[in-house]
Length: 406
Image (tube, rainbow, N blue to C red):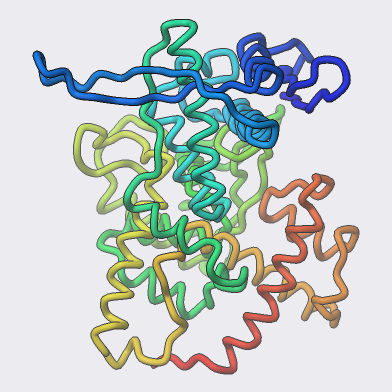
């Protein structure tokens, strides 16, 4: 998908699909918003006769700055939808009829959890996307959407703009403590996948049991890796090809699973995994979805539970948790992945006897780190990503000197 703010001809944002065909409704909305300078707001009241909540949609005049922000946020959301590949029939052409849960996944799991956006930015996104879907209700009779920040993510959004980027880094010892405070092997594996493999929460769905083909090549499934585990007692790492279907931007990559983690996966498969015909390794073990692949937000939700337990133990004064790195409600699942990337970056610098502050986006160290994480190395935010790693490496060294663990 493509988008650009055409200031000369159309005087508004233009949105195109991958074949450069215009997305008609978003383009019409941008014209309404940026040229006419209107937005559609939703007000509610309770009907005195039926006691039902009635929603009324009204047009409101806005300024050029607000209209630009609305259309910019809409473009970012449409780009995310265009890359969404988890639910059938969710794509750029069906975006006007998306389920509320998908829209709210963008707000909560993506913007807050994965991108660490501040409360102000997230509220802008909510208001912007709501403006678009309210516009669809008023002029096209679409069903109203319930869009907002979930309570459990509000604190994280509020804290995202309080501290420096360094808070995103969790020391290896801190990660181990978080893993220990899960309730099941499934939960522990999902968190370790973030901290030891660099998986995004959605990428936990990409562990397939059986061998599979991708781009005319055959790759080993998890069951084949279990066979390697049993037959070679000295092998320390096991390569697993994470299929593009389950990754952001559709970029597959190789994961290097440590022996200990693969052993935990095998133990889970043998003892805890529900009986199912599913080809996915990690399955929900309760509720209506029992026996089906875990959902995209399972990692985020699991991290929140473990984080709460760790914070409670720190506050209660348990000796084991005294003197450890501070854990706050601003820490989220994606920080496990960021910490993994920082460790890769730092260790590559150490291995080549280079200062991490000297690394640029053209360095082999940066490119290898990006490859391990599935990042684009030529994107517009590549340099920003490098700066985050450099900053976190400095924080890592500082914390290793000051933090003690029992």
